[in-house]
Length: 83
Image 1: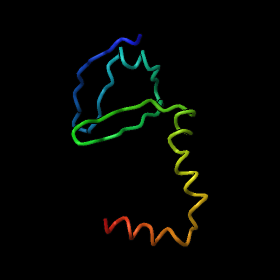
Image 2 (image 1 turned 60 degrees about the horizontal axis):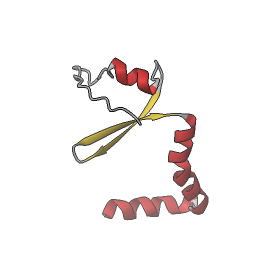
Image 3 (image 1 turned 120 degrees about the vertical axis):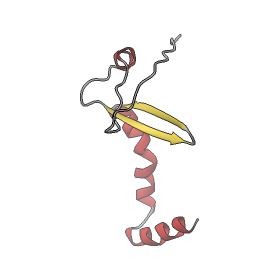
Image 4 (image 1 turned 180 degrees about the horizontal axis):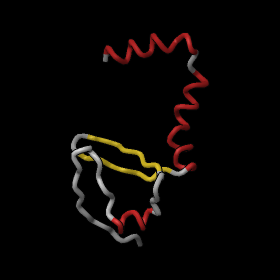
């Protein structure tokens, strides 16, 4: 069973935030580690990215690329902007 870690941080004037040591250790985050940010309403989720998670996250984009012709991209962008 995973244990929960709850920590608070502070944002610097440059918009940077230090990830607390316990969390960095648990996630094995080191200098240069990649993370993904997901914002939904007022909730921010940060997820560690590995080559495996990056592949699974980008899979729908790679699959869509196979179905969409380059000439269709502009029309798709315009339709989505109208929504």
